Image (cartoon, rainbow, N blue to C red; front, side, top):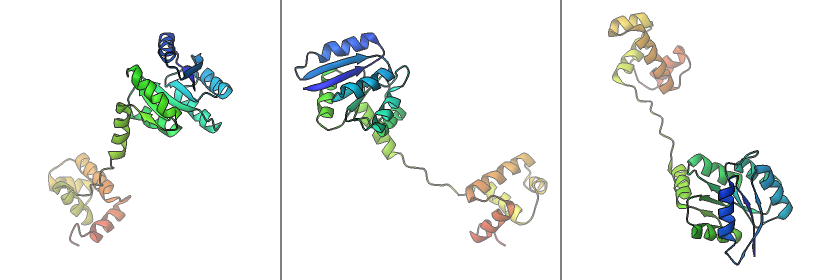
Length: 210
């Protein structure tokens, strides 16, 4: 028998969940609660196999409940129920210790399957949640772009030659503000914190002729 606690602050949703899950012969619903604090207290007191936990709860939200259960080393497996398939919610829930993540618009058969899997020591993510995790894994940091544009190269050469912003502006027929913008971008691309460091890096990298 799989013992359950249902935590959702919407009474209609809570009643619907209870009505559907009570049809399963191997489910025993121990409690239905409507706040995060009640979810935490009921889980610690009743020790269900699975807690179905709404992510948006009054008092403590679902992720905060998860984090507190983890600190208390609860053996209850938690399935997050949510209206949201945002990457942030999925990642935070999994990191906080959720064994499942299911959207509220899934079919009841899928929810029953998720409960059975999680109760048997496995994990379950609905397809949308799986997609968000894969997006996170596949997102690679963009390589640093330290390539200078032609105009930035002209400005850098002038800086190395000791010209000030006004002189560079007159030589290149651009405004002083534009020169300042180019100077900042060049420093950022080359990782220089000062003009002296910028000149040194430019010469070391062979970006200009001495």
